[in-house]
Picture 1 (cartoon, rainbow, N blue to C red):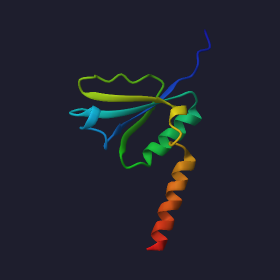
Picture 2 (cartoon, rainbow, N blue to C red; picture 1 turned 30 degrees about the vertical axis):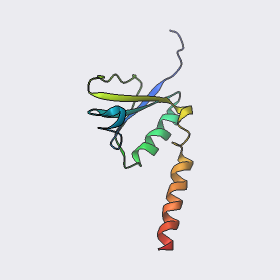
Picture 3 (cartoon, rainbow, N blue to C red; picture 1 turned 90 degrees about the vertical axis):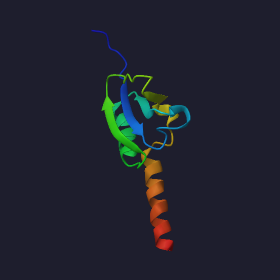
Picture 4 (spheres, rainbow, N blue to C red; picture 1 turned 60 degrees about the vertical axis):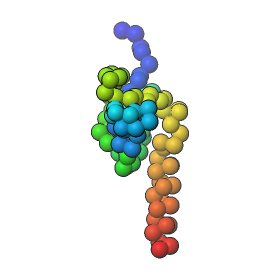
Length: 102
């Protein structure tokens, strides 16, 4: 058996982008291709904590969505530098500081 490169896909529905722009009349799907479970876990965690992302799931099978119903944005883990644990922690700290100032 050949040793193939691991590819995992974290897919999610983008509630904010659905229905307008390039996704006008469609559901907007955002898919991140990862090369390790650690990367997939990180993207899944961050996506699960964003209010605009729903139906977050990880699969070893590349998602295939009908273009008549879905607009799909496919990115690699490397292209998603804003989707890191550190960014979530920064946002939480910022929100906490903002609340303390009120």
